[in-house]
Image (cartoon, rainbow, N blue to C red; front, side):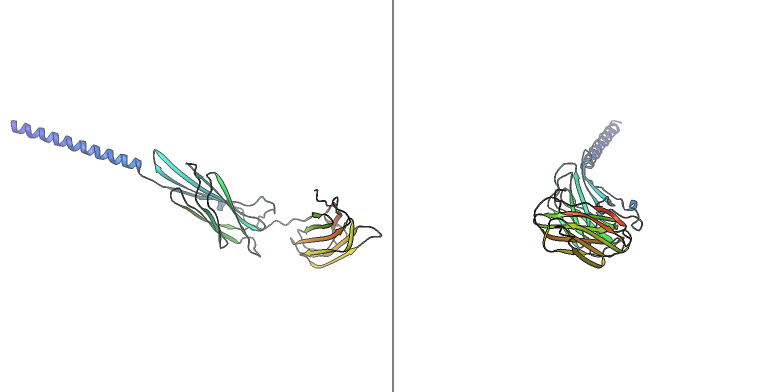
Length: 297
């Protein structure tokens, strides 16, 4: 009987020891799990929400159609998680494909290299502070048209594992608007002005005409870009010091005609041109007149 009691006591003590060891082991595993590094990635893109490029167009000065996306990486432990996010906004203008990249992270430190690859070239910045945005601009290829694809990638390194994203953007064409504008480039004795004409619909005949003030010397140098069947003529009415410039021709729909004029003047400053107009074959204004230009506004 005594022997049996001793054996039972020994068995109880042994089982208790095993239970203690088991609890300690489970506690250790629990501590290990709480300190284990974890990383998850979230990725999103707004491509599905973009308007159809066959029916939508952009204004030369914007707003533009923006494709955005982002990726976030988490690391650390459950008691002290850390994260970093790289996001982008991409769009096209009349001449460029643009990608704006923003970097943020929980610790507020600067990122290492951030780069964008598009059109066969890579642009990068060596460092980008948390909360800051870098803009990368790539020239559009000659002859581009709506619906052409711009496949690009974004890369960020530093602060845990690198982030890489790629996406495809479909280009949007410019909306055609009828416009006529002028700009004074130089107002000294050597003067220069530029006029721009663009028509929404094709025009079989147009006449752009206006005057240059305080004209002196030989004929003005007139350079015309765009249009068809272009003719340029100059005249001086009466004994006036003004010179009349006339540009005639035709233009296709949404075609841009640029007229650059250089001439000598007897003085500097002030209004350097008279009013300029653009009319059709019936003498009707195609666009509003442009008032006299000056370098002051």
